[in-house]
Length: 140
Length: 140
DNA sequence: AATGCAAATGATAATTGTTCTTATTTGTTG
DNA sequence: CAACAAATAAGAACAATTATCATTTGCATT
Ligand SMILES: [Mn+2]
Ligand SMILES: [Mn+2]
Ligand SMILES: [Zn+2]
Ligand SMILES: [Zn+2]
Image (tube, rainbow over all chains, first blue to last red; front, side, top):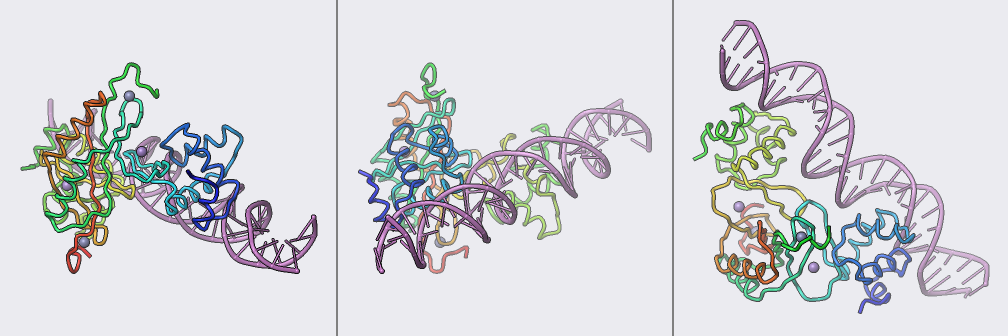
């Protein structure tokens, strides 16, 4: 799916830090990660990459369309692999567990809401904050 | 609507800084303002209030239910008067103009999405980023 | 394989938005 | 109007992110 040549295609040199970050996302260990998350994961496997390089690479990957950036409540950006299709998120306020969903009816209504006001949608973000009601919460 | 006694009711002393911040929101000059926005508006009318006091007062007003806080894309919190009813936002990417909307069908679908996954919704945020298509864009 | 150079990295410093600390001031109450 | 708790303001501290720049690395060419 995302091979090293995705980097070349995006005009990015195939460097060690970039490969490390990309394979961390591809490992599937965690789908949604902040810069700090990525930094710490790489530290924990000895694949050290400077924190500012992580930030730079994440931004480049976002621009190259390899990653998608989200602004979850709490101020820090979170990234995930871009698998082409849009989806929204429901986040457990207790444990941080994130589930993804796509609801065609919500998507359609947004278009109508925008059109009624003369707007042309560029993007949108919908986050539902909730309790997952699992015992115990899966992540924490 | 929001009189000074709203402060007392919330257990907050009726101080000059609080009155200044509250009346700025009530003036209707701008509905959605960040701490920095409030700070600068007050400076511009000579009603100086320290920036940290602005932050503190905004947080207190949020807790007292006088204001609602939003996390717009870009990292900074934005506040608006709480007029009791929930609404979502459509933001023009060109001029920053914000319009509010409420769509019962979107709200209802969110409940279904959450329920299907066993979640109980606490809150949600939906921002549509768009072009307002006005010539010129109203705010800038 | 060695060379050359643009591009990328990492150490460090700077910025931005926000919160904390604490001495001074202010609002309320007797 | 005195007393005292609560609130303010100045400044430091913090957290997330971005910028600067000397050194290193990927990679195309010899
Ligand atoms: Mn996702
Ligand atoms: Mn609003
Ligand atoms: Zn949970
Ligand atoms: Zn506009």
